[in-house]
Image (cartoon, rainbow, N blue to C red; front, top):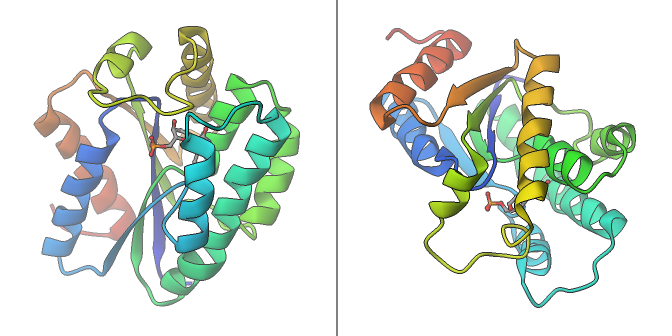
Length: 207
Ligand code: TMP
């Protein structure tokens, strides 16, 4: 396995999309073969599952169903794109991965974390990120940054989003060598330089 899987996590409006774009430009300029993916989505089947999950017209979905649909979208993306790309030596930048399910469905909805990890190992075939950036921001501030109609998950109560944020920080505490917490209140340039530092270390790049 020659490639690397780098994931970007965070609660709503935490600024991860901007940083993923900057990271992609940076790594491509260094001559690396970079692939950007998002979750849920990235391939036809997973994008269809995404529509069901995020559509505000979807009502009454059980916590179990929601968890399994996120996992199903992930399973397809892993098998169809992530494993082949890793074998090809690509650097994958993935907007969300299994940590999102632990934070949103686990800490947010109250689904047992152990169950999520078990189903997660099946869905990912045991593949884990080499590096994860967790963009951390005040929940109110993050939600206020969303300037389009909110989706089914974003529409949830502030208490839900606070549990998600707390969950993310718990994940980072458990795995500090993989998960790097980034303070999203810092400037775009300051954040980018921290991101670059970790990318350089992982990929043995010169600054
Ligand atoms: P996005 O807004 O970053 O594109 O992500 C889609 C939404 O889905 C976002 O509100 C977070 C949520 N989500 C989960 O609840 N569980 C998951 O496993 C993933 C990947 C995303």
